[in-house]
Image (cartoon, rainbow, N blue to C red; front, side):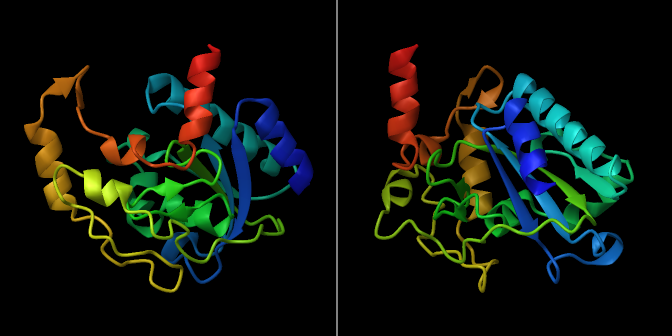
Length: 216
């Protein structure tokens, strides 16, 4: 089932798909859904990307429900809706936690998921389930090594330089107040804050991204 579901999602637009075991990481109303399908797409986060992620989530949910399993679709972070049942669960769940548990990447010094192949350029979505899917091997700690490019180039000096690990998942990597303050004070481009240097400067995935641009 795991191989078939992964192929189904990759064939319909997913860039990467991983499977995570989340027992002990979830609480409250969703603790029984302790398996996760973590989906990543290598696309700039915009309305079309969100539509693709939602379609992939629905496809995964249909696949699992057809085989008698329960599912819960957690909306992408940029598509969260207020005053819904699922909105009550946002504080209990983190897409990056599912992705690191599924071996898709680690949390970098910039606080973003870093994929070995795509860097911090993946947009994420997750489907929780009670299906007994064998988890992929999780990534246990930050693999940024001695690289400090994001910290050195952060205009707000919000990146602390500390490192994430699964044993210390809540270490302060980014001083969010300083990051937000900088972005809101910068000139807006197409309605979005004109920053993103910590994404663009990351060497992981940059060669691949630049090669694809040259090939267009």
